[in-house]
Image (tube, rainbow, N blue to C red; front, side):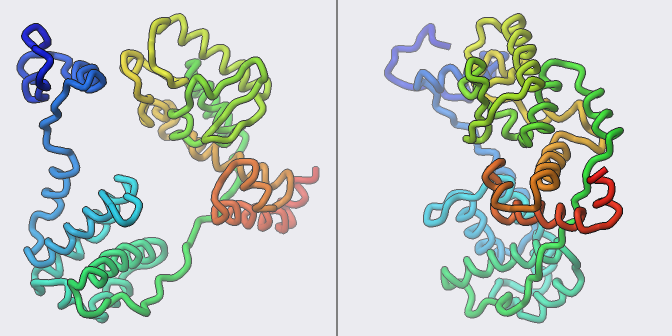
Length: 335
């Protein structure tokens, strides 16, 4: 690709398609050299076009403006792409239904919103109304509608399922499924340090300080216990043996990411625990609940130890308080 390059222009990604087999890796190198002209259509554009198909033009215009504002900003902080996708996926059936009767969102009435809300329950109702409020709030702000039909419709509180501790046999199944150095390290990080699978994948080599026995997870430094220390040293030995020359700065690597600089995917981290009750994310939740049961249901303590949001800390503290106040559980915990 570079044999006839003079250094004056860039190489288009479309040129790689017929010339290079592993064009993804070549494109990454060219991009780092400042020589790539990525002329591919963004995946977001193709997704948005597909999801807006079938929606009447007047409604589609306003919905597209709202989705692009969520995705790109600039006046508000752009949302996570998964959140944007989830928002439109949630209300797309509603928009298709309105397209049969209305030409614009300003024709939607409060009764239309109430009929949707009354057919839903729990968190699904709450989420749907929240998304519709976001849509109509944007339209009202931009002058696309005269009044917001979601105004004064109560969303309602979040209905979370009770958080219960994992059983010993469920934890044993998870540890039994961890048959590789990477999965054993992942279990230790989730079960002992309450690390999310996303945080595990994003850990860097610089986050590990074996000399001082410290580990930084999601920006918070924690002491290394003996079990996690052993799991870390075993993984680092495995990493050096299989990929001694990798330039990837992340702690976890595999055969795909060893020749790149990106983190491993969440599927790769969690696949070994699919179908189990004690998944990595469930172990993460169980560790936070255990902390609350051991040191008391204090949300400030949980927030300080794990760096979680106040709302999440209050939820785990409330679950622990409920368990501690249940006579049978109270008896078991003290025996």
